[in-house]
Amino acid sequence: MSLLKTAESKILACIQNDLWARFVTLQSQDRIWTLTVTNKTIPPKTPLVMVHGFGGGVGLWIRNLDALSRSRPVYAFDLLGFGRSSRPAFPSDAVKAEEQFVDSIEQWRQSVGLENMILLGHSLGGYLATSYAIQYPSRVSHLILVDPWGFPDRPKTQPQPPAPRWVKAIASVVSLFNPLAVIRAAGPWGPGLVNRFRPDFKRKFEDLFDDDTMTEYIYHCNAQTPSGEVGFRAMAASLGWAKNPMLERVDQLSPSIPITMLYGAQSWVDSSSGDRVAEIRGQAHTRVLLINQASHHVYADQPEQFNKVVENICKTVN
Image 1: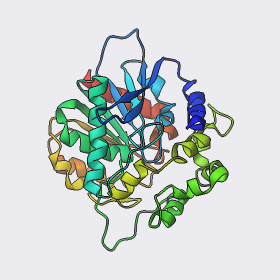
Image 2 (image 1 turned 120 degrees about the vertical axis):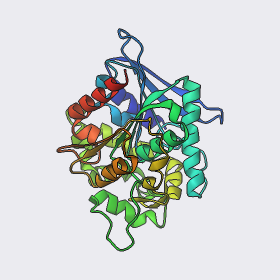
Image 3 (image 1 turned 180 degrees about the vertical axis):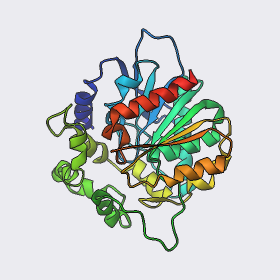
Image 4 (image 1 turned 45 degrees about the vertical axis):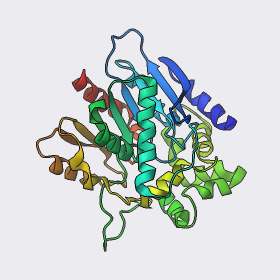
């Protein structure tokens, strides 16, 4: 954990606005590692809450936190079982695992004292943010889903969507182990393994760091006792599909919650799920946007465009 703290500290040192980093203790006594980034010269506005994806952590938002906190408070936290947050046991049942994640988000909201929020989730974070919005609609002023995982049904006969090499590499061991077991098994060679299968991570941030800071951060986020990934494995039929697809539940979202879905035009996640969400929701506000020259990690591939789009969405709230 100390190596993760070191790598993260180097990343967070890039933040120019006011940063408050601390553990937020939940009623369950689990602790959620939380960042609040603010610009104290602005009047109070609805906060933006950012939820990372599978295997990630707050450090991945480094290209976004300053820009998005210019006009409102921004909160980012490590999901329960990931990054520096507590790593409790997760049930093997998909519904119960999802419930544990969502309940931790609601406990976090209560502990931080937010009445409502603009909720943004990437990948797995998008799946959980949607589940949260279904259960706690009064708390969500706008739902922003960035390349969300787990929406479509798994095709019965069609092949899986084309996935990048790193996804296939992890998929080859996921049926036997937890998804990131191969990284932990690599021991001291783990950061090199991350570099080999995810060279894009280093490239995405190379103007900020000329060394392996980001790949070391990713490695140390996932080199610890598996917890959140156990919960993810319980919810996943495979890396690309959820046992309980969100498209089957989108109709439970309150029509009063506006939704914007952002997809990378070159992502392995199929944006047609966004069109299906808009179709299911009918007259309810739903927008689907593609960001060109962006893959799954839209926020890092095209940060300026991503930040501008998200800021404009936030302005529609207040």
